[in-house]
Image (spheres, rainbow, N blue to C red):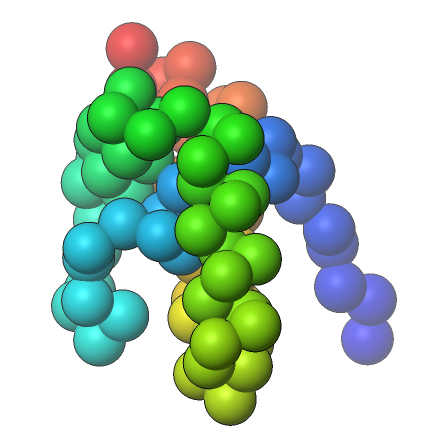
Length: 87
């Protein structure tokens, strides 16, 4: 079985990762994009990466699952076809 890798801006994953959005919450694509935009507006990319690094240092046992969650949601919500269609 071949898995298709969707390329997207990794900053989006970091922004969702460090947002205050609970991991267990089901998010639709529009909400993911809004959360990413809001977090990047508030923190900027550098602060998102810094907070993610701190989280991996402080809580590696939970950080991996959260970044996987963020990557999966962002790969779905941030694909160019979907973002263009939502505009």
